[in-house]
Length: 573
Image (cartoon, rainbow, N blue to C red; front, side, top):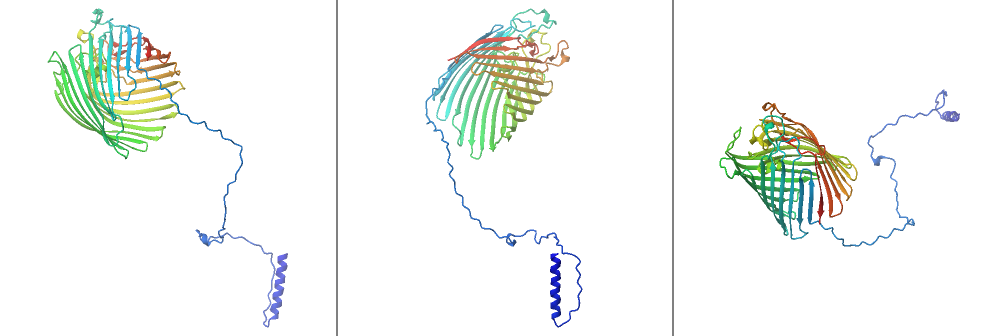
């Protein structure tokens, strides 16, 4: 209504003004059809990206000042106790260690060791060990069986400013009886009478001299210089000497790249002291192994070369597959190793590619199995090994490691025994050694768990697949698994349990002798270790081997000793 009244007044004033003029404006008819209604239209942007200075709003100047306000409190900090430095006596390191024990089947055990006091100038010591056992093997023809091993050692080391110089001598005497003749109820075994089996013994002396750098390398320096000499004599007039001279150098740089260089020379002779027509072997090997290790953050890499120059001489060789009497060998192979932490302490990848050239000697082979036959054939072994792995943390206290690899073997030493060993007295001895070419695929899974504060557990699963040329991987199982448990009750006692499983093994070609089985049965065995600490100086121990009384064979015709318990005491002063 208000808008309508204003409209009528405006028209009336306009009409009066119009008639006040000299000209005739005519007549206009106006009609009101309704009241005014306001409308809102959509806004349209004139510029999609307007500038600040184009806006109508101006900047508002602001001035401010921050001032602290003191708030009263009633807190009074506790005064710190003054730091005090006091001397505390270091617990003395035992200088004398004595371990004496005895077990079933006439099994004595003795270990004595003496080490000098701490000194900045020198250190020296000596040790003695003895272990022997006999009988305790079921269903065996020779009742008088067993083994004995005795060793002694002395050492001396002098410390200089940058290097230490050391020397040591070890002497070992091993004696075994070839008991490997089970009661098979087969001729001619059933006609044999129990008696003394053939005997083998080894006398081994080892001398070492080395110079080792004690302080870190700043630029370029020799880090190790060594010399080792081994000499062996056995009961069957075999003599063997082996000498090695390794030298290590290191060049350190400031860009996380270090260069290592290893030079090594080896010499070996193996011969019969009374028979010039017996098999004899000799070898000279020169190794050059440069390698560079560098890191980038937590990533670590090693790259290098392995160069081997070898001269191998064979005399009077008796073999089904004759080999060249004289062989020169030169090989260059790249090597590498890496470690890549993806998540620190949580997930890590690793891998390596390596090459190895090894001289097989009577000393190294007899350490693997004392019951080896006299007059073994020797050869070198070449190994190319590639492997990748992954390790990580499952949860606090539980970690794992998985690995898979590939190994190419040349002249892999494999223990073998003729399936007709029981038919002739000369074969009723130990095992032979065959050298086969082939490849191996090893797979391993390892899990370590800390179950409680005092209990640790570890499980290892190993699977190996072999493809050998000219035979099989005799006596080598595909499965080899192990579980370890360890309990420690502070300073009172320690308890350990090792349970292992060995899968089925093939000992020979079944067609060569159908009267005995070529398959050695799989078995599970367990060993128990208990240590009770009576005081800091005195403790007692108990060891039980083959606690499940399992009957199994180490190698064809060589059964394992049944349940064996050894108890004794340890004294430290």
